[in-house]
Image 1 (cartoon, one colour):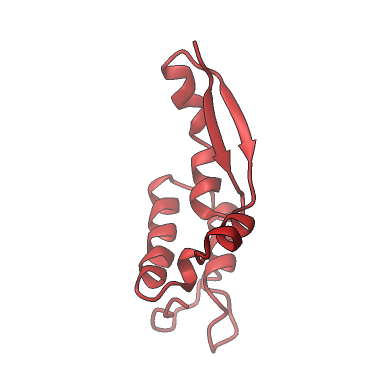
Image 2 (cartoon, rainbow, N blue to C red; image 1 turned 90 degrees about the horizontal axis):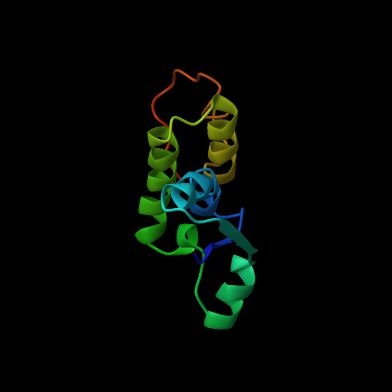
Amino acid sequence: MKALEFYFDFSSPYGYLASHKVEALAAKHGRTVDWRPMLLGAAFKITGAKPLPEVPVKGDYAKRDFLRSALARNSAERELSWLLSVLIPAPACGRSPCAGCRSPPHRFG
């Protein structure tokens, strides 16, 4: 049976999260995984596209969806901390959003 081709770039939160599920998905269907690393930055340069966080409206939604996807996956705290550090700039209080800050919710982006 043909291998499942998995194209990924770990700079993509979706690629990172999917990488944790692809082996089980392939096994469920009696397949192996053919891991295909790629550079999204190069693809964006060739196509003229932008990373989701830089696209108006889509970017705000994507930042929230990245977090929601990580939480739905029951990510370990360190994985969630990594994701938050990549997606959310430090708040004005100077504490990271995952450091237990009790101030009002920090806005994304």
